[in-house]
Image 1 (cartoon, rainbow, N blue to C red):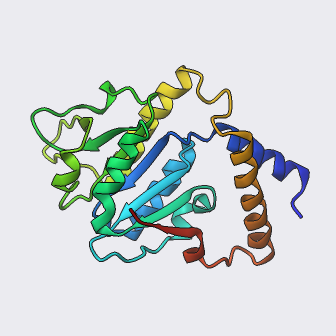
Image 2 (cartoon, rainbow, N blue to C red):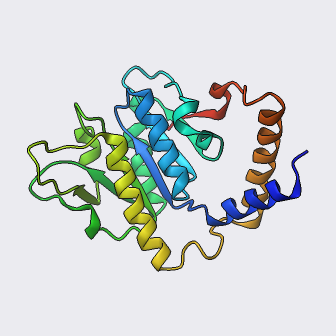
Image 3 (cartoon, rainbow, N blue to C red):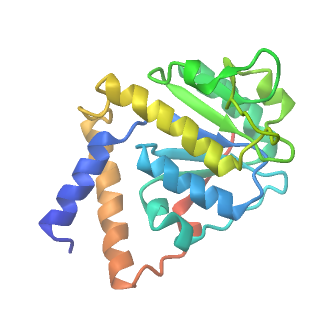
Length: 217
């Protein structure tokens, strides 16, 4: 059983989670990037991370990169054919879809209001975000670059954008009160306490695949 200090820490982290700030990774292929993005997502209070791959296969998590952050976020994998319907469903739920894509109409990532319910969609360095998803974007953003290279590693880019979202949400007081319902908070807490207890007893040797859910639309 976890001690009171650990449970208090879990309560505090849950109270700052931002269920209406979510990340989707399109055309994902790098397990290192996924792991780094999960770590950044947890750091700013993101609860849900979604991803799709062309191979429709699960992507490995590197514990040395996540440093345990994968245990405090929810990871969902979707079939590549379902990602458009997933985006459309998020829009019906009131999320603005913010997509990184290099084009003339794109605005700086700092110009977007991330205090709104936001789904941030990131692609990979080679192919970027799928064209069918770009068409569904409410905001198309870029990270201004002054050098010869016009792109950042996707995990670095995701971290920069998420911390702009964190800055805006902190200024608006979004971390001062829990955004989760009491019922949802208790549900997640029970799962986290159980997983944390098992992880400590087994020295962290929990099959990571069990921490990932597959969704379909």
